[in-house]
Amino acid sequence: ELKVEQNPLFLSMQEGKNYTIYCNYSTTSDRLYWYRQDPGKSLESLFVLLSNGAVKQEGRLMASLDTKARLSTLHITAAVHDLSATYFCAGVTLGGGADGLTFGKGTHLIIQP
Amino acid sequence: DAEITQSPRHKITETGRQVTLACHQTWNHNNMFWYRQDLGHGLRLIHYSYGVQDTNKGEVSDGYSVSRSNTEDLPLTLESAASSQTSVYFCASSRGGKETQYFGPGTRLLVL
Image 1 (cartoon, rainbow over the protein chains, first blue to last red):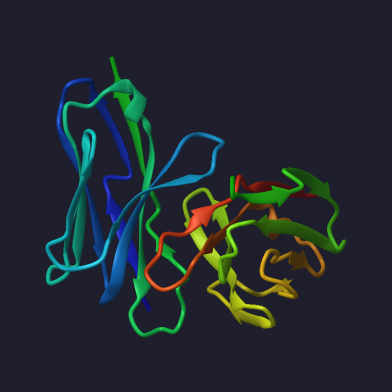
Image 2 (cartoon, chains in turn purple, blue):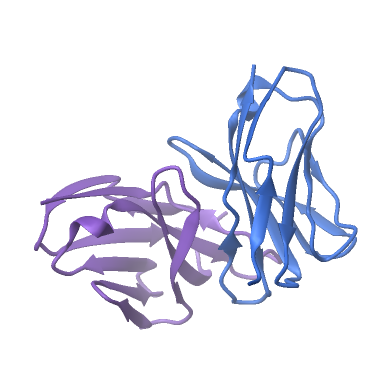
């Protein structure tokens, strides 16, 4: 059974700083997703990482995947207030016959001016 | 524009009642999913479908059922609502394989 753990679960940081959110998973995952959720809203897809060493960047966010370490990271560069949200990573059990996602509990990120 | 919608957006019901939450997507996606979101648990998979007449149980399927009679819709039914089913419910769809799952706006359900 795939388990996904994120840390930290809560992060308060100042604008302009850099930080990394970590996502560890327990068994081989076919791929790794990152989503963003604003309060009271739906989930917005940020990245899909499909292979070992994959790196994707969008604006101030960069995600990477290390399948050997079973670790994905979401790096925030020079944070701005608009990036305040909850970030989820999610994996899929390899060979499980299901594309249903297993989510981490989310990282609640607050970026203060 | 293609989209995924859910209705109702908010629902209050009583324990023991049957409740159906609707999910409709216009992307013509084969795969559809239902998740529930609870504080401290993140999102958990309830049921999923790979196509018409196909349905499968997810991690937390007890007390829920789905049916897929066409590509666009995957309604979620709570057979006899319980207070433990108070939650936010999200529907999602994807083209399949390694494609991104797109989420609907969610339904907030309160069971009294």
